[in-house]
Length: 195
Image 1: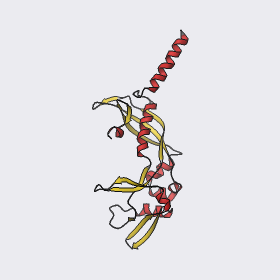
Image 2 (image 1 turned 90 degrees about the vertical axis):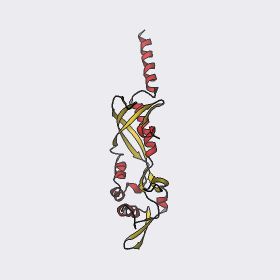
Image 3 (image 1 turned 45 degrees about the horizontal axis):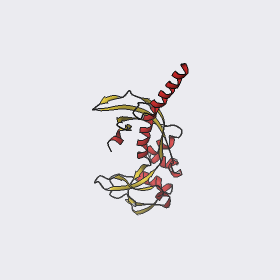
């Protein structure tokens, strides 16, 4: 009898782990990972190339200067107020079209790279009903890999704060808090539900 109860308990544990609607670390980790897979490769630089410093809304001289220093872009001085930055062969390896949208709705290209991996779900709230949806807040940690060597230089990290945090994540995982919600197919990140 005792052996039968142990087998039954083991079957229930396995069945509970495979239920995509269960509120557990495994399902939340999968939902967060699915979202991170849409965020990464991350676009750290969103700009069309050649990029000109003349007439731009944002001054990206520091960022472009750092990229020029590591050979990702070449720089050409047009005059004392304008420089033009062109992608080098090294820069083209991280280039992505349609990396973002400008203020007037135009598609912009950019430099995008990296892969994020959830390393741990550290805590989550008990699921609760909010506006007709069962939701839970999830604290988690993640690391970022597949970063090009040039992105790991001090000069580039000094120009891109988020990139610096991603590079450092291999030694000190990044921490985040996101919301997941229950759907008919299981738990999903709130941003995946809206798509």
